[in-house]
Image (tube, rainbow, N blue to C red; front, side, top):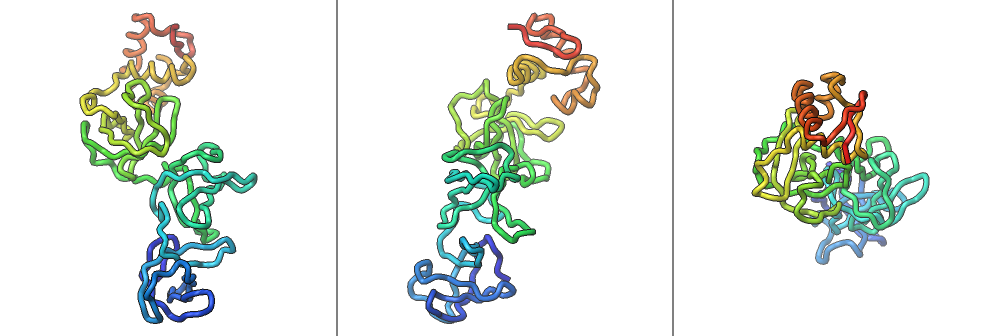
Length: 278
């Protein structure tokens, strides 16, 4: 059966004024316009095509290849933003790809480069994009080890650094302070696994020499303070669940870390919370 949003090898059923009609099984005959057809084909020929919908929502075949197909991630440029609808992304075909507002984790503007996942919406049967990457990355436990080189696609900036897509399968975090080079959303770079936390979160680095250096809990707390304007609501009276959810650490380890920072005069205890000293 032919699949929308993917490559299909289809047989030419007939030729008509607008182009060739391909056998699409349950989808019926699908038009391949002459201008998008390869030379030398005829009735009975098989042709490898990508299936999508045109501006009038009609099924259409093309020999052009989009920058991403259904089930894939890609960095795409925002062509325009339409109020009440969403953003349109350049994915390499004549009809731009819609990124609905409901599928945005952060608002985008014309000219932005965003990392998006392409999917087939079951309700509308339309090909759409989403930047809610966490919903579509692999749920399997990663098999990476510390120091392992990986391909990264920088997804977006966060208060702590940059979220990156690892091998188009998992998400990880590049912390801002140790970055040795400038990176931007949509950029592809080589990185290394710096740490895999007990909760499954992955820390990344761009330096092979620093791949085995894991940020201490004290350093993580300082990073979090800097990212949140100098103050955190957590302190030694916070519940173990709150502390583990934020830092993947035990309450005992957290109390020891903030105690050390207090003695070093890097923080003050505000009860509730802690505050970074200038």
